[in-house]
Length: 280
Length: 229
Image 1 (cartoon, chains in turn purple, yellow):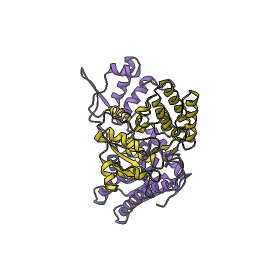
Image 2 (cartoon, helix red, strand yellow):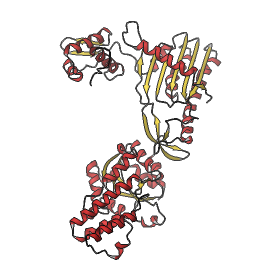
Image 3 (spheres, one colour):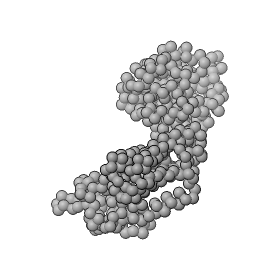
Image 4 (cartoon, one colour):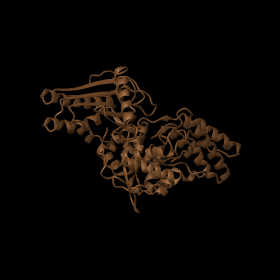
């Protein structure tokens, strides 16, 4: 992989950030051995000193550990919980919980929240308020995806199918959150849903305004049933997307804090401008 | 054919071999086959070949090419074959997609099956069609008409066997879908099951030898049993 010559960061910073991403996204698992310095020199086509500087940086961040004579390893004890669920569960230990979600259907959000909401229901988690904001694509309007694969044309019947999927998960989510309020387990429990006319290209979660998770939706072709007939469509596929975590901590020297700040600003800007209240 | 019979036939198939002209598209929809056949005849006449009466009125350019194989004149065979290849490229640009042809290819891929093209048309024209329609990644290999060897076109099993060899597949893992009797014959000669696609009235009766007959490509999609469907 070549480094970006236009990147204002030094080569060692760039390499550190590439390796950091690979560790955080699980390409290198906790306890796993990193490629040797020699291999990294080859991979990035830089001097050995540059690699050493990058590794020092990751060591300072407590992401890796070097064992004399045997190599460099991903630290096992900084193992971040894989996926969203543990983060959400931990977020529910706060008094006031906020979850902002932007994406296609909210299916992932509902799946990730379900277990945690169950723990609130049985009194294991006791937040005072829960505010969920869901920002989705308005499937009543034509947009780039979903569309017919053959001619990439808009098809209201295809959108209606996507809308049914969206409505199902949003309805389930809304009901589950509201139930906690109705039962008096949480003083205030709300789900607000707004929709905009941009196509779904990524999903974003912002948890308690402190952590963010981001995943790309690749565009995939698949054959689905529309009005009883098979139709090949281009669609956003979210279920296999890796979620990139942005979880700033005090000693963190990465850009995570900045990312979360910008993600929040983006979400609010969408929410307060082109998004409209959506009734499933 | 009952749908359960079709499901059983397709259900076990790891490899779907598709004829191109018919199951995937109508190649000569905008560039009439009969006009191409006429051009090939002119070429033959220019080469001082005497045409038998049945060839004089033959609307299928592949039948004209097949006739050249009887001439024992390799240069003429090559000439006609190459002329036809040029015309096929032109025709493929304006080919008309078959209803649910795309869905069959995508659904097969989606359910972990391999899709190969086995056609008497030129591989170049098939590749061009697949590329234009963004279908290239789903289809491998594309076996087209052997160069200047019309005697090896379907119903000869040669193209089917070439696909099996390239895929490293056993005959029992495969099923071929075609819209002509020569497809059924080629498949059976290679030892694989064949589904006749009766896309025109009267075809169903001619597919007596087929293992199954369908009237719409959508029936195949249903037989793939997709989760999302």
